[in-house]
Amino acid sequence: MSGIISLNNITKEFKVLNRREGLKGSLRDLFSRDYKIVKAVDGITMEVQQGEIVGYLGPNGAGKSTTIKMMTGVLEPTSGELLVGGRVPYKNRSQNAQEIGVVFGQRSQLWWALPLVESFKLLKDIYQISDEQYDSMMKLYGSLVNIEELLHKPVRQMSLGQRTLSDILAAFLHDPKIVFLDEPTIGLDVSMKAKIRTLIQALNREKNTTVILTTHDMGDVDALCRRIVIIDKGKMLYDNDIEHLKGFFGSYRTLKIRVSGDMGKVASEIEKELPEFKVSSDEEWISVLVDEDKSKVLDVLSLLRHKHDIRDMQLEEISTEEVIKKIYEGGVE
Amino acid sequence: MKRKSLGFYIRIYFKILAQNLKSQMSYRADFIISTIGMIFTNIAGFVSFWILFTNFSEINGWGYYEMLFLYGFSLVAVTPVQCLFDNNWNLRRYAFSGDFIKYCFRPINLFFYYQSEIFDIKGLGQLAFGIGTIAYSWAKLGLECSILSILKMVVFLISASLVMIALQNAAAASCFWIENSFYILDFVTKLKDYAKYPVTIFSQVFRFIFTFLMPIAFIAYYPALVILRPEEPSVLSWLSPVVGIVMFFISYKIWMRGATRYNGTGS
Image (tube, rainbow over all chains, first blue to last red; front, side):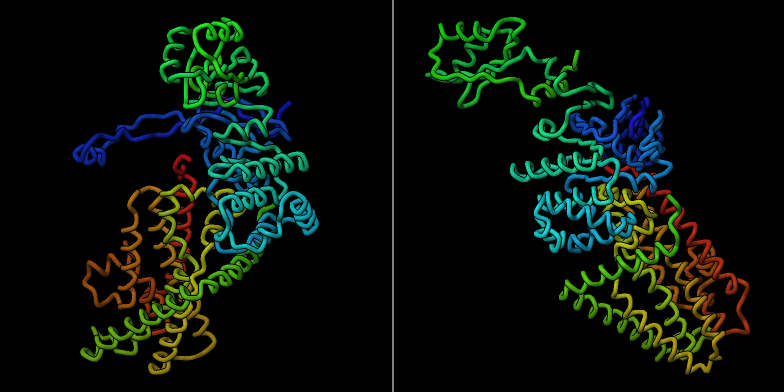
């Protein structure tokens, strides 16, 4: 079954000038034809079904934005097949735009000087939204957020949080099949992040909108995504359920202890005693990342208890953040 | 989904325009100061023109009122570029910062959507000034005044505007290829100052340049001749509507090509 978005072996190459150093180098660059080919996206294949929320993750420069630009029709793939809603986005940018919504964190697409409600009315005309649909959308928005507070405020006077909220509402206004959210919670405070996550979840559930979410905030991933796709250096590293991902590293748990005496010194002693595990420390806790395939947490604890005066302890399951970090660093295998 | 009609675009444009004017008025101090600035710029331009002619009664066979007519003609002809295409000046900044991409996500023509964002109301003062100058010199020259001649005037003014718009579009679009494109845009804008003179007062070399390479003679001289000296317009004068349309079309293609080629800075 083919999904609402389907990528088949998509590659995007950029031609980059090999820059030389210094003033002389820059002068020579003027006449240089010395290009190198950089593969920003390298053979990515995936299918996304209607109504899914997919977390699209990867370190900076991994190729996330490039993929999104291709799916939104801004960039043409160098090779491979890309269909969004059954269309080739690059060839039908305008029609494709009618069926998608895009939010680029911190880059508002609303009219800067206008109150939000006027922006909405312009979007209503641009996307040719019917009165009934517009009214029902506004009713839905009213039930999800405090919309009255936003509607009559010019976008330029809004806080970053309000602006992001408005941008998300604007992106869903024409009831698109897919919404691309590029780091929607970047730079926001904790309560605003929570608000935005709740909003995205509610809109996804209510409208069965497919959401492609890129983020560096694992809170977003935990709250919203069942499926995650991880890429790095343009290559796909992982595409599966988030639970499945945790299973890969499920045998890892973090043991945190607090001891009397000099924490730093004790930490370095522990590091020598347990060479097979990663030990780190801050002012409060010494953390040991225990691989339970090698030895049980309890054994480690009792080993440590003999040598050190443990005053307090905690046990933590591995967080999504750490899992992702491990994938970035070493891959799944 | 069917192709969007011209009517759709006109309706959208006026809706955006109405909102735009409302918000420009809301920055009151900014609006008043820039209006005053515009008035003074126009007065200064006129004064320097007047001083020139108190010293020379005519230049190369061109009398005071004829020159005044050309001056007014060029003022009106550059009004559309000022009012409707002012966002071209910001293009470089948007392209550099990567913000340009935000214009690519709407289901309407990219060029239209980008330019519709700004309407520079200050240009209207210039329009009034230009129309006044034309009317005054028209009367003083005793030119034929009929519906046909006014219609001709409008058509040739529009073709002249298209030339100026085309030059600016192409200059602004250079930012998609060149990093420091400000000078190109600035250069083209300064060139238009020469548009108000009859091209015959320049040397052969410049006459060639201003007609074929940097066709600013089509911003006032060639099209205005049709009204001003109806007995002597050349083929080039009658061709100016075609020149305007073709140049505008080419500049639009350049602009769109640049925009679609543009990859944005990573984000």
